[in-house]
Amino acid sequence: MALKEKLNKKIKRGKVEVRINLSDKRLPEIVLNKEKLEIYWNIFKEAKEFLRIKTEPSLEKLLEEYEIIQLKENDGDNKELEKIIFELFEEALENHQMMALNEGKSMKNSIAESISKIRAALEVIKKESPKHKEQSYENLKKRINELLSEELGEDDYKRLMLEAAIYIDKMDVNEEIIRLQNHLEKFDEKLHTEDNEIGKTLNFILQEMHREINTISSKFTATEVFSRILTIKEEIEKCRELIQNVE
Image (cartoon, rainbow, N blue to C red):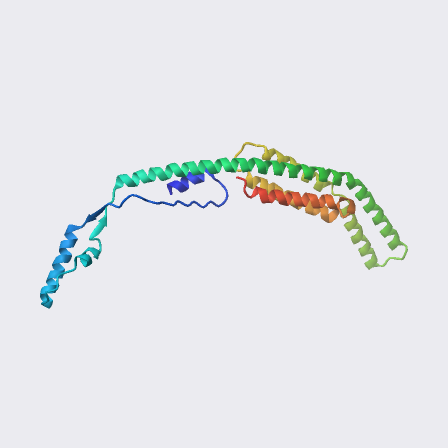
């Protein structure tokens, strides 16, 4: 429990397995339990007399009896061993922290590169958005004119209104773009903060970013931005995998 407590102070997230291998090369200190040996000896003698036999008890057999030969315990040795284990554990933990710090710097650079790619792709989507909105409007107008070329019944009128609503909804992705930009700003701010335990926060922001780009991809179907949307999704997923190891 003491080792676990030290570990929890250093590592806040993830699964950690600790293995301690002990090889004691000291010669064992053994003692003879004379009291128990005497009791066993008397039992053997009593059995010999009862059975009226001349066979002498076997010394080897006597020494094999439970706790006749015992290992000498030394509390001082246990305390010294505990001290050694704690020192080695602290050293291993410090080495782990140094490795984690170096790995974290590399991960931070990779994540920053992904965020940069997402920003660039989002700028293209933002630039193409007005064109997409205008094209959607033209498609809507064309569709309405086609429907209005004939006399509309009640069902046709409902269909017209439904299609108009769908087209209008698909015209504008500006809100999603703004929210995604805000998420990027927040993510970048957290990424460069000195606060501890930011892994869960970053993961949550990435989930929100993924939700926004999914909405954009469902509304913005133009081939001009398909590769950009795909890039954003790939980079978000790459970041989510890395963030799982961030405290």
